[in-house]
Length: 307
Image (tube, rainbow, N blue to C red; front, side, top):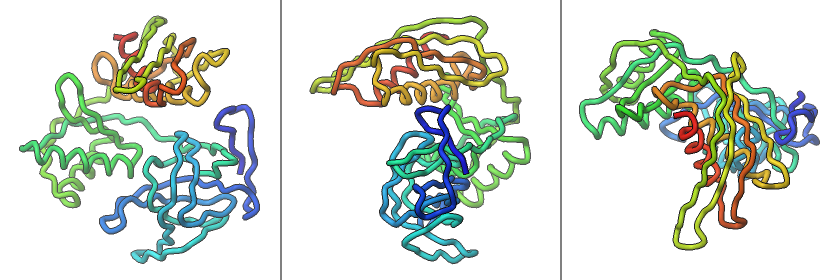
């Protein structure tokens, strides 16, 4: 198995099916169990993993800690202390790991080829009769979206309506049926509609400063970004930062912030596609800016620049 370096995709790393190699695994399925909570199913390619061990999610840059390791046999769950190459198990305690994410040794990060998820093609509006049921609806939809990456949920900011999107009418019918039978939510469903997309026609450049006083030193983050059309190329992020204007550990936060913004759209609440975001310059105040400040900065910058 060969993967790339998370910080330099031009550099590759080989992982062999050996316990002596650094740990590396791919999360391929998530299931919410009413008794044990979220189960993250992984296939281990190299190394070993023990209960309580800290691991690194190379896809999103987050650290995770394994609470329990379960070997699943039909309806039986067997607790085990260690797994090795070739094992397929369920991990308990993963908070930020989704389908297609790479889990690896923090000291030897590697990013495996991600699972290709098709884009949604049809959507419907869902609602409930009472606000209490609406909260239950959102919790249930988030759980199903984690289990099924081809199923998406978003809230239209302008109308505050909840929209679910999937691969077809049958797909959404199954989702609604699960809401009623499995999660006991009486959802009211609107008529299906085509999933439109937004994009840009011309290049634009925008600057944004995130300043927040929290009682101590506060937060300060500044980014300058250019957004340009990328016909047929999907979303592309380009880092042109030089001289440490923005620390390298915060660059991924800017990228994740942009990805958050384009999911819900800018003008009509439809996902934004085929754009290239170029991070040109920026600044920060040492020791006072958390990663979330740059993430927030990127969201506000993109929305302000394209609206």
